[in-house]
Structures are given as structure tokens and as C-alpha cells.
Image (cartoon, rainbow, N blue to C red; front, side, top):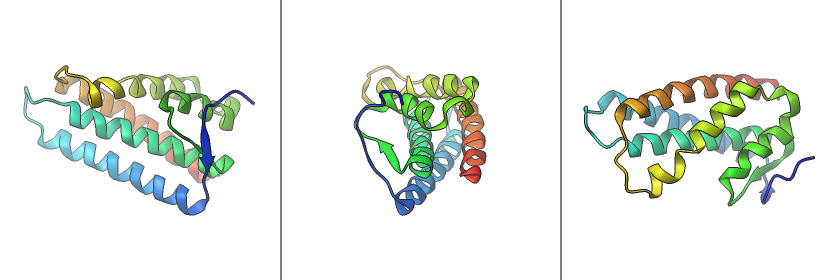
Length: 139
């Protein structure tokens, strides 16, 4: 078992709630992208993308291990690897890290987010979400 950082117990109801939130944040990101105007600050869109991804990861770790990462979003990647082992594809692990790396700047930074970048991240989330939904069906 790898060191995954702080975690807390998560039952089936918590897992279902996190999955619902993952889907809702994903839908909110799609809606925000559809309504976005060129030149608009895309940080809120990126924030939805990041929150969706984190919620998908929580749903997976809750489903498989009955625990979720807590307080340290950077440990979420290690938690996924710990829970899934070699079933976590390298491409999904890289995708997860790429999206998660956007969290601090989008949510706490002062740089204006570019829509073109956010739309690329949304495509990455679409791929991650498809994989996560399939993984959750296996659980």
C-alpha cells in the first residue's frame, strides 16, 4: 500500500453523493463552455472541471476501498493508484494529474483563464469521466 495522505471513511451513500456531484460538476462545465464568450475569464469553467474530476476520484476510492482522500488533493492521485493498482491506466493517471494541476491557479490565482485552454481540459475530463464511469460499473 502506498502512502496516500489523510483520508476518511466513506460508505455507499457517500459514494453515491460524490458520483452525483461529479456528474453535476461535469454538466455545469459543459453548460459553462456552451455559454462562454471569447475573451471571457474561464477560471470558473476550469474550477467545475477540477471539482468534477476530484468527485469522480472520490467515488472510485469510496466504492473500492470505503475511504476518500481528505484535505490533500495532490494525494488523490496516489489514492487512485493505491485502490486500483495496475488497473489505473497511465493515460488516466496523467490526465488526472494534468487537470488537478489547474486547481490552485483557477480557484486561488489571479491569472485570467483562457477559454481555449479550458475547452481542452474539458475534453480531458470527458475522457476521464468515461473511464471513471466504466470503472465504477465494475465495482
